[in-house]
Length: 323
Image (tube, rainbow, N blue to C red):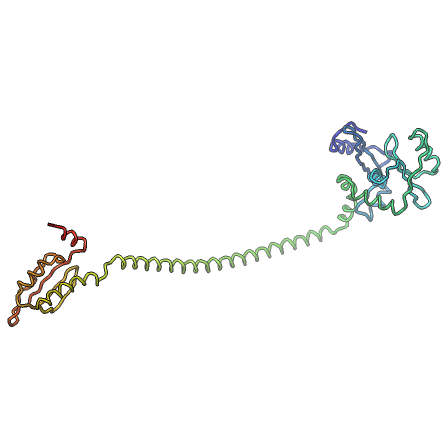
């Protein structure tokens, strides 16, 4: 029993105790918490020759006595448990020195010894059947602490299997597998790179098409904006036709009306060209009318060619407000 409070410290101490038995063998330990500051270390040592026989066919080897100890308090409330094993009897009980698991030559002497631990009173053991005993061991093995499983693992069998393996053949096989893996990986990477390159080219082509359509859309929008910003020709020419109709109503004959470079060229036949110039000069829509060619006589009428420009609506409004 050690005056320790941490299981980790108790495990370290148990691993350092390598001379528990007077013979060489496989050593196991199981920790038992007695109090908050006391931990008992229960050891069990299997002789080397016995362990070798058990370890040949088993991956896990664990002492039965420690397994009983682990499941003893969980199943039996009585201080003594008795199990009939073939012609012999197994006794499990607690003593001042710790847990005891023995197969005595004489049951009477064992019970007498147990009675000494209980103030001389004879104790009737709890009898477990073979089935109950097997269930006790199974439950105990399933509830062992993790460090016990590490102790139970048969490292010698693993070493024996490793020693029997053809190392050179395994190395050659491993090399072949490694080379094959690297070759297949290279092929797969090459295929993936080629596939990725094709995908990138395809996506680039699609993006080029999208960008091309986007540029066409932008050009169309710019043209639309330009067309929208340009004043319609009809709205420009319509005032000129109004002026021409006024002249026609005054007995004039319209020969031609040409619009070019924001200026109108009017060729008209009237009785007097001066009347035409007077009418155009007094029109509020016209700016600076002027004859651009000499007057031509045609019978008792005159043909005159006049060029003028029109003012916009805002200018007309302002002109109309002038005194």
